[in-house]
Amino acid sequence: MFGLALSVFLACAVEAVEAFTIVLAVGTTRGWRAPLAGVGAAALVLAVLIAALGPALTALPLGVLRVVVGGLLLTFGLQWLRKAILRAAGAKDKHDEEAIFRAEEAEAAAAPRPAGFDGYAFAISFKAVLLEGLEVAFIVLTFGANQGDVGLAAAAAGAAVLVVIAVGLALRAPLARVPENAMKFSVGVLLTSFGIFWGAEGAGASWPGGEASLAPLVALVLVASLALVAEIRARPSRPAVTG
Amino acid sequence: MKSARRVLGAVWDFVVGEDPRLALAAIAAIGLTALACAAGLAGWWVAPPVALAVLWVSLRGVRPG
Image 1 (cartoon, rainbow over the protein chains, first blue to last red):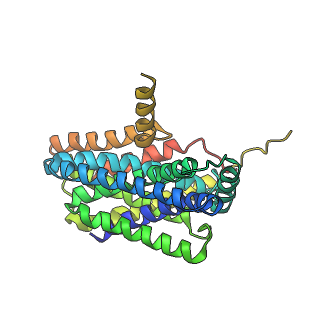
Image 2 (cartoon, rainbow over the protein chains, first blue to last red):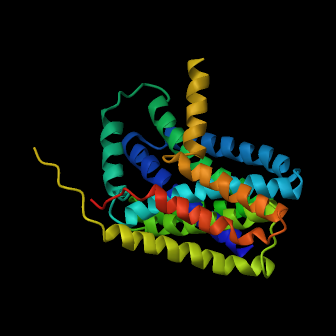
Image 3 (tube, helix red, strand yellow):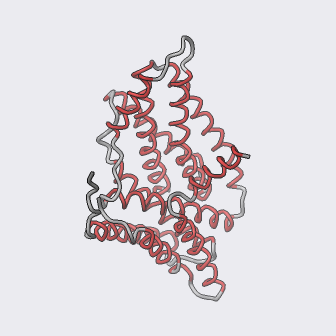
């Protein structure tokens, strides 16, 4: 259960930081009414999605659920891990919340302002929260359904959002100092490990020691990922592009 | 038709992402585990090396900037 709550909390915190940057840029530039309406509408869509799909997933037979959830988590986890390894190895640019904030702020300032409700600010905030939130909804649903506790997963996600909002409002600035890639790396390791564990169980395998084998599995995936980072860093650099 | 294609494209991007080999790795890891179990072997050891090997293959040509 701790693994479930930690994975969902970290994944949600990372996505919330990214959405917060965009909403903050739009809100400080164009006023808060429409962006907050956009955030509320997106949160409602995500809550409906989780409430509708959660019971449907938990109704599946356990073996089928584990194969489906394990396969999806493994696919998703490997994607997160690949991107985090690329960023940690210096082969892909890291997220720069300050730069994203400035770019969003400039776009928001340049967009035309209607006399009534600000559709632009609503749409940008709605899209940011919905797109970042979909990944979280997916993780909440898969982890929650497999552990039979969608409520705990949703609570961990909600707690992460509250922490990000509280810190963000206290600072009134994008959360540029959050170690986003380290968090994404951790989430990638956890999703991949849980995906392997549940996928194999669903396929009929019994892990030695049951759930106790999750800890060495997480350690294996972590060590292999760190080794990949070190190995990529040791490769020759891309030639600089000139002209 | 266009919007259906856009929705399918978004779902593909969301689930499969930048490298389809990683999605295939997930299918292969679970499928091979099922085969090992059906053959009477303890299949738990199959999925970790398959998943990590495909991750390595997916990053093989990458060079730091």
